[in-house]
Image 1: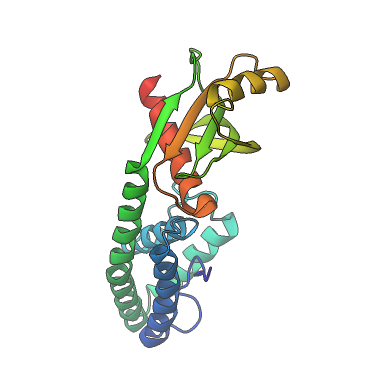
Image 2: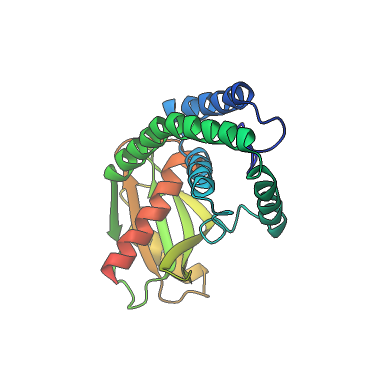
Length: 238
């Protein structure tokens, strides 16, 4: 996918028409993926840039805590230095403010589209525990079925907890394990027994059966939404 640099709106030539061209080219690519229900990494990238613009507009340096995976200390230092230089130039600052206002205005519909796709995919998901669930279900497996496809994708998951100064968040790490063809005899229950037999490091794992009733792009949409939905489901049930 086409991407924007972290500081695209203040790097190089600060010219509204030039930045407008860069932005519209980027959004055209984003919307092309959304038209095919491909959410990730496009939605994550769009949210990052939208919040980055908001943060700059509020005269902060960068959302370091919200997006640590996208920014290095060098990025942060460069943005602070650039900001210190341009705030002293009124005409440049006005041009940047115009670029930011326009970018936020144009990004908002794409964000709404992405959110609507996400909500729709999530609404088509069903999550069911398979067998007994351990008291601490933060490590285990989930079986993912995409619409009417018989193939199920098995992943091992581990839910992690991380905090910033204001709140606590839950994330999830996954590792692909195997696939199996679902049938009358090859069921999620039998797969759970097979996993316990073959993978001794989790003697009493949780297994969740996650299925959508409509097919979606697996890697770009269904799997990312399923991961987040599973975190929400386990957190609410725990």
